[in-house]
Length: 390
Image (tube, rainbow, N blue to C red; front, side, top):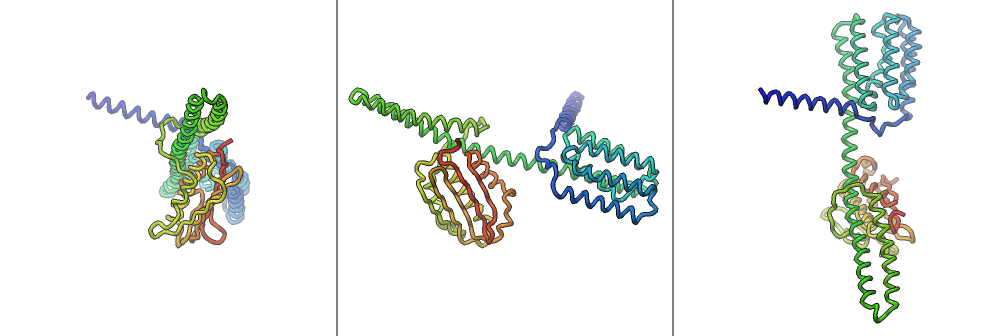
């Protein structure tokens, strides 16, 4: 008996915790305010309402219903930014119209209200979704009581209504899962960047220690060596401070990162050649890449490495991958392109690898772009500052 009570208590706690999480859930951050297809949707709905008014002379209070439904259609433009308000206006107006006309079935074109039901579940906060669902269910019950349609038609309409609710919930959960995956990619890139910055800072600190020891060892024989050592220590300390500030600004994860030597731009030559039956990789490095910040060099190497991997996996019929690095006074330019087919089949926003490369480039104050070439193939381009973020 005690075990049953404990089980019931824990189950009740779980249910209450789930309800609290739903109630307190904020609105999705990725809701677009208004896009071009919204205007197209409103135009289609208004046209459908007008045509239905023309071809349904038996509709009770025909022009009143046409005027009200046509006036409600533009509210679709605000269904994402104010989903609950739009739903309240649409459904309350529909109920009032039903009471005035005595027509529970209404106009067929008023089916656009399903977009509003979907929107309040997909784009509303937890409170808005719960309140909207309550209004929808109350309206459905009111319509069933007023309707003289066969029970099968009533049940069918209720199922369609619930399908809109389920569709909104499914897309909301899908967007949430994708957001979690993207966040994992960002955390992974920050962890890798932490390793690169660790190597950079360790290099500068080692140089400071060596210069200080050398200055102390030669101070008695060469008094001027101390001054030289202090100048070098100041330069190394300034570089270390810049890297440490970058670390604090860019990294938001407290877990210790795996520490291993960071790759350099010169290591890109190791990626050249053929890997099995894949395309040939040609690497060209132009300009002075010796004075590049280690964190920038590591980021450039990993972007090129990931781009080559993507080309080998997805570029159909590719025979060649070109990697070109050009260094000037302030920036490092990277371009990785292949000559495969079907470049348009790999949109930039579909791959988490591309998101990771973009995240790494932007964290270091650079730019990133990826997309199909006009003729054939796919190109990844990144530009990074030589010394990292300012």
